[in-house]
Image 1 (cartoon, rainbow, N blue to C red):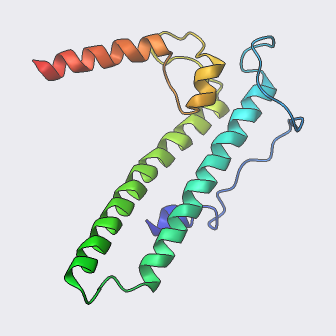
Image 2 (tube, one colour; image 1 turned 180 degrees about the vertical axis):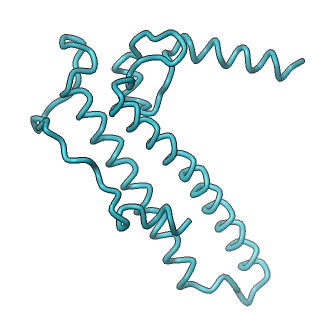
Length: 154
């Protein structure tokens, strides 16, 4: 976990952009899809999200290192262990989320961001706003989930 937490300290920083976003910029369907402004908008959203996750993880790590997990009362101890178990599971999910964020950032750099990996069609801006790491259109995602459910039921 420490290597993930230290990624910004190890020199992994958001790339310098040649595009400057206006303060009130929001992607719009009225402009060319995934133009440089839209790409920069989503790049910044993804970097901010990653930075927030890493900051929360550092906070969790600091608390784990500084607070004793041993409570004198068995009920208090059980409650604390349950809370920490939930917290650590959340951090593990967020660790996996960071790899998806990194993949989305790579897709922006490669010019593939915002396009469905199955159909090649543009993913709606609304979907990308709600889930910036989306790799499929809603329709392709639904088909994928139906096929997954069918194969699970077999």
